[in-house]
Image (cartoon, rainbow, N blue to C red; front, side):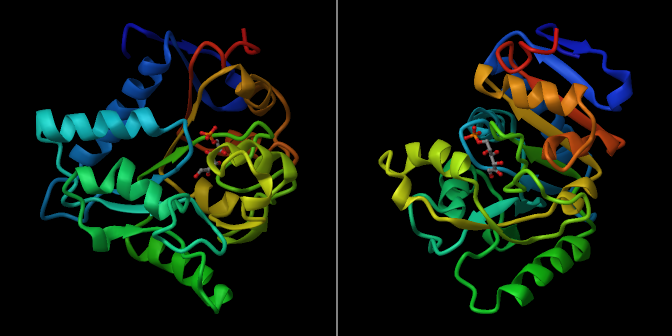
Length: 261
Ligand code: F6R
């Protein structure tokens, strides 16, 4: 454990909760875990599979992984990635699509093979088939070794908004008004430009990952984090459904942890 990270104890939740001294420590702690998974499966064997999130929270993690690639030879040549979600109706080259985000934050800066990067497509005509194939592909690649999550102010994970069932799978979802409002900062602060729907891995898809890390930064996430860790596991608080997972770590900065202590 890093010096700037302290483990908090919430035994009833089954979750590991790490309070980091700074935002940068959140990024470093998450990068250490990602690096461990990447290095645990060297070339020649079935490669590591990362589940990845977009949004502001993991940007520092991706920057740190890029740095480790450049300066320490961390290779992504054998890595497969699956994104959690994508907006419906945005083409991959749209600067707010999650494919675009991943290319610019991570993929173009490391040696990952483009054909091993998977992001749901927001433009399929047969969505039912597409979402099923996404699930099948995750299984065919051996499942997700490490799933990276952020958390919404309403405790959504991926775009599993409150009410999402524990057994939900990759599907088209309607975004809550509060989620569209929060994300309008990326769309000229104009909520009418934010897509109303997205494709998201389901809660069950996320729970099948061998290891899950949920990163959260800032006081705006404190309430969602506290409910997820200390409250009952309920679909009304989607991140609380992680409580059943055998290896899930919440990695928090002081703001996000502020209602826990
Ligand atoms: C993004 C995603 C979302 C975000 C969440 C937090 O792929 O699935 O659940 O993680 O909305 O977003 P930020 O990090 O921008 O606060």
